[in-house]
Image 1 (tube, rainbow, N blue to C red):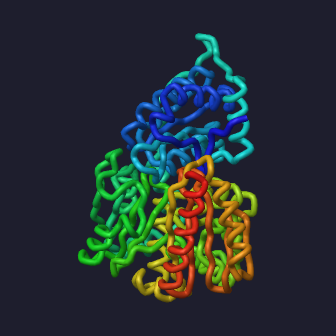
Image 2: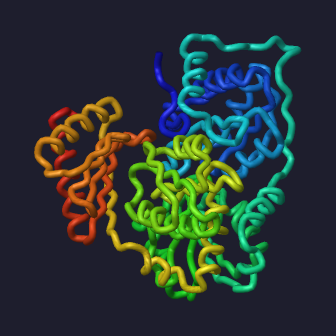
Image 3: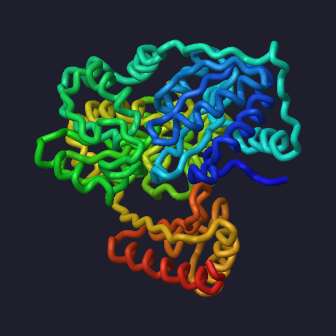
Length: 458
């Protein structure tokens, strides 16, 4: 049987993910939901309206009643599913991927993207032609979905000290990155009494401002504005609004494991401990903070879907990813850029100091992230070969094979090499006690990977 789903949904360039394919996928999804009540939304990508209409057609043809949520963020759609007590949902988005990509996310009754065993059920329907096509008088109906924005914002506010945050009058720079967060974050800022300005606020599926993925490299201009404008912090979101990357008051952009550690500390102190669920790619800082506050870390493979389901399974108090994903179960079990923003403001208020100062007090590690282009069909063989090299030539003292290969060269230095589940690339993550050491190791393994890929014709 073939495979449709990657790490997070079905993704591809629009000429690979065609409207015809989307209809068949939607028929399979509709068959899986067995004529249930399903909500559908889409992000601001140029091609999203095409797939949106194709998916609605397939779902209705299989007998599902469809609620049209229109242009929305992924977290708001997920919140709507569980609040409206629907059977599931479909979100048209490719999240942080470049504009030529798009995708289809399938979300379960609990508002969480379905896990791998459920994906396999849809793939079985798709590849073995088990699709249910209903007769004309049994097709589903199309309705407008209720606007859940107010309820969504109320849920976020219930989980933070609104009075405390509001009393501070924080000045925040909001950067939706031409994505759909512009539909939700300004309202949240208003309700938290924050003064805010917006950059890259126009929804534009070509992502002309700085691209769909917020990273330290793409946020150089945002960082300058934050520093020169006297902002308390800047927050940048990915294309569909489920991730948030923070820039501190001094204009330094931080990866999500550092800022996530601040939120982690805030939550563990508030709850008196608990389980933090995070991928193997996250910093050792997460582990140190957990130990300090009576918590523990549950490591997973990389992928927000896995983190969300593991968070539910173990009854964790928080899930987090180094790419800026924060899952707070009191609100919902999925990553949510708006919830992350409110939690960060809550943590800053509780600490009573600037974000830059709080970050300076964290355990000091330096991380470097690189990516190397590699054809999908050879990615996993390349990982096998680089793993064998590390096992033979590196003097490591600990290794993990949860996802790719993670080798600890000493207690403070590690390298992780893994195949992306959504793009034709291999990712390199390095953490060390100095920038020079981290950069050196990243460059070394980037060269090693490129050499292996050339040898394999990739």
